[in-house]
Length: 180
Image 1 (spheres, rainbow, N blue to C red):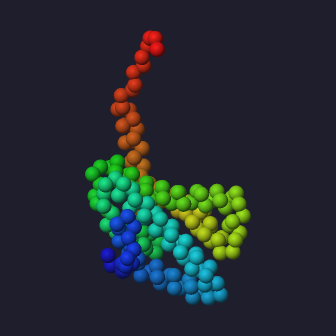
Image 2: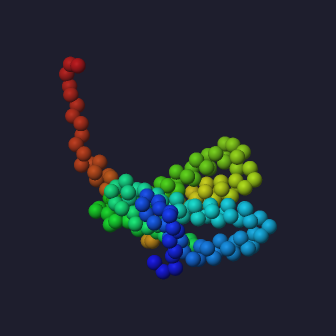
Image 3: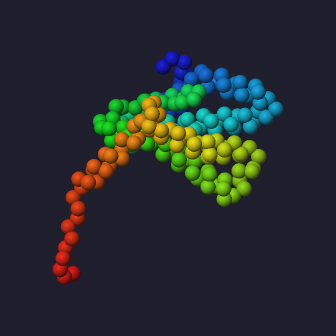
């Protein structure tokens, strides 16, 4: 893809990882603006990219669990993309789409609970970690469920009617009457 550079020796669930030049430009700009607190800027940039990375890694994980090979993960300035083998069904496509949100929630919810129940978020340098990977990550995950292309919400909600129809088709267990 145009503008993306492969991060050598980095693979996630056999998928190669690529980063767009705009991410590096913005990271450099933020570091320049935060010359007095470069460590805090690096933590914030890492957390921001972490949200996109975790989301795309979730897609790659779910794709691989369903038997589809993930090829590449692309990290862009405000979005990412996971390329994987074409799913055989709408159900599998919806499950893989849920993978990104599931990965985000698996990271965000424990961090939010930890931040609310302990004082660990007040440790210097950890505030942005809990802010970005916890609260902002949760908001991004919920926003991504909006049923509008190109967001995952355009595909994830197709899973509910599929599961409902599969549930309705299952034979109900027969009740046995008589002595035990």
